[in-house]
Amino acid sequence: MERGVGQADQQPFTLYQIRETATGEAIGGAGFFGPPDTDGVVTLGYGLVPSARGKGYATEAVVGMLKIAQTGGALIVAADTSIDNDASVNVLRKTGFVEVDRTDDNIFFRVVLAADPDDTRIRLVTEDKKRFMNLLLLADEQEDMIDGYLDRGDLFVMGDDTLAVAVCVVTNEGNGVFEVRNLAVRPDRQRHGYGQKLLRHVESHYVGRIHDLIVGTGDSPITVPFYEACGFAFDHRVPRGIADTYDHPIIEAGVRLIDKVYLRKTVDSAEIWDVLDVNGLTTGRTVKRDLDGEVAVEWHYAFNWLVGANGDAGWDDISPDT
Image (cartoon, rainbow, N blue to C red):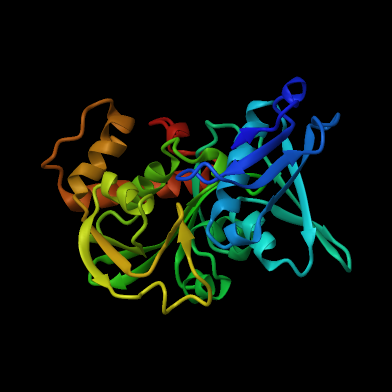
């Protein structure tokens, strides 16, 4: 994006041109309706020329504007769109906005930017899972697809109900195989390691039961490298597994996703316990790689019980004296 001419004195809450990266051609605009008010709220607007719509540019632009707003000190970004503008509604939901009101003509959204980056406590949510639908839609754009696995899956949430940072849904496919069905991180918290931390927690949660962790995703230039960096490797490809499943084109980083790619990671329980350092937490000693698996599982269950018995306590809050 490029700042509009004559707007330097209003930076950063000003107008910006949206340009196509490859050609440099202006394809739209985005901007704020003035600086934040006394409550830290700033209002966002954006638009694209018709030929540029449906290619993911609006989503990328809104994510960029959220980063600008946060850098500028805004706490909340507001936006609204007409009730029949499905494309704009989808863009706002995908980028973390939550509906706060609606009239006969318009839907009003807000997204909270102020979050404690250290608030990375992870918990398993078993009730009212759909309250996290806006985050889940970041990773899976079609709600009825999410409905197909949300109830039977385990939902892990990082952060609290007021401001969840990331979510992950995992299903048990049997024979020690668990599948990551959904992994999403708030746009303003992406590329900070939260997704990797959530995956490590998932592996530790199923220690003693998990052998392989798999994930099926579009052949995206963003998503596939992320999972590879987390230790996953290519397993197999389903031709048109994305294109023939969703009711609309799925576009990421300007690329339409067609095939579905499955990646697999064989989970080493010894590595999990090295990461968690459970033995060190209780005794101050380092975990040995020849630690008996059954003992490790019992420790895991014991610590889960301790955490649950101590209200909102996290792993780091539990000591030998608890």
